[in-house]
Image (cartoon, rainbow, N blue to C red; front, side, top):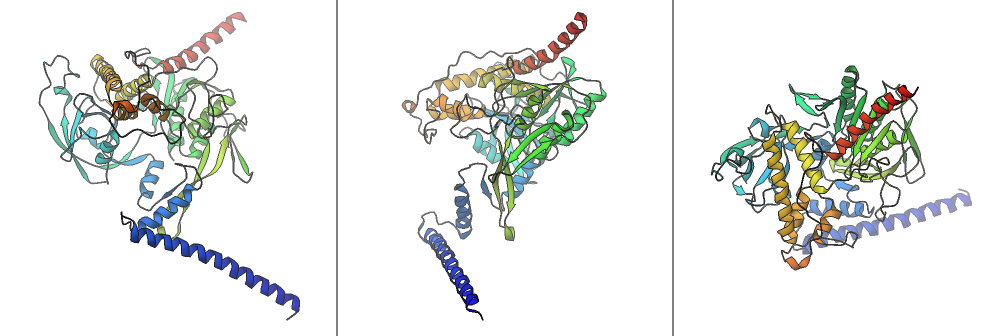
Length: 519
């Protein structure tokens, strides 16, 4: 063997031993720590717990919570159901705790096990599986109701017919309670909604503005693109030329379905979104489909519109084919990928790229971003419509009841009066409750973390802000200005942002007719 080859051979052997020794040392330390934790920790975690904890710890180095995370095998089915717009439960949403009784109001989802069992808006949950809900938080209630498919949950219900706030003519609340058992099922959520239900079908035009289409997209699942196309096809057949796309409260989801919706509304070749990874690789998504009839579009967004909803809103805004109405979006501009681990040991959800508007501006809001920095989607000038957290919650309730109720009159004066009363009770609780109670109520009505901190008098950007566990009133001061709640907006929607979108689409008609007259 030539001497030169011997040298090469020795170098390779040396490097192999060096790398193996370093790997071996790290493996030994990892195993040693695992044994120490199992033997000495007071909580006595199992080997499986330690293993899963080590994976979660490694991913925490990415400093990207909650987007980068380890998904153990037990959580994968639930995660995949979420991507598909499904969950296992009985179909209750919009929980709010009654300040007087401690019981919970709710809205049943249409065609859900709860609705089929006869539960109605205005009923209250008193017990779950024999346990009172009075001392439960919203999270604890949700956890106790959700469960595996084909299992049963027992509820004690106070029907609305016995509740004075719902029927003011009652002298006092009647002590009428109903026991019911509801079997949990995998529920397919409606992710593309119209204005109302008629004969079990969505009506995609506004009741009080039938010349305007209304398509509410609540989440981007693997069926959102198809369902949105079907809604737009139906509107096109009806000769509807103006459409409102409502992305408020939409947390995002599947990127391909955001691209599919843009394909329906943008001209062939129009840019939709660009993704960039850490190595400088980029991909530009463009519209690949010949444009259907051009709609006049208003897009509704708010501070909870994120990710895929921001992609669609920004693409339509940058192309000049839509006016964006509402308030600034959330600012979540990153792409997550799923990496399956071997031996059915779970999966990793990891941020692998960022996405950018067609204009080249960023969508993602960094941790240290300020309000005057460029991120997210901002409504067009003149179309910013800010509403209070209470008004936002109120209009969500109104719409949710409109689309869930099978009663012939839909929302009547009694339901409106009841919902207004509940908002005033929420305000009263926020004024007079302890810091912990204020935080729980704020979370129930969907206040953002910043708003929760404001309720508690905490600095929004302070390090490690947390909600105090104690009920000591001196721990935090209450700083949100709570004037008496009065619903804004016009009936039947009571939604100032929707009103502004309708005005824009109607004003465009007036502008067109004026142009014709001037010619």
